[in-house]
Length: 89
Image 1 (tube, rainbow, N blue to C red):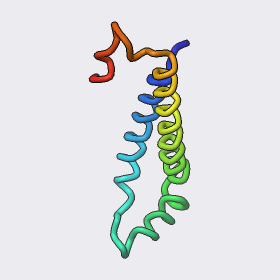
Image 2: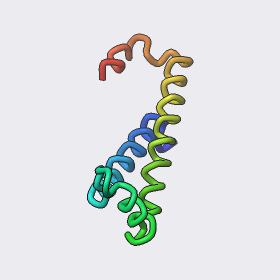
Image 3: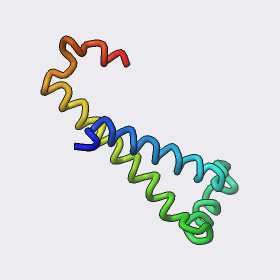
Image 4: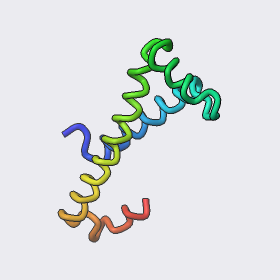
């Protein structure tokens, strides 16, 4: 397996951060501009709707993968000796 659940979680985190920074350049979180910025992002910015949906789906998938990763670590006892320090990391 190339990526485990932890690696996939990290990849999804990177995707969320990168798309978040790109979206931050377009969106103005003020009462006057928020709705119009979302409409501009969906219909005027090239691949804007794709970026917004990629950001949202990567965030949802990351939460699910972190839960699955934590469940696997707990059920297999991967936190026990000699790897008990991994929880600190």
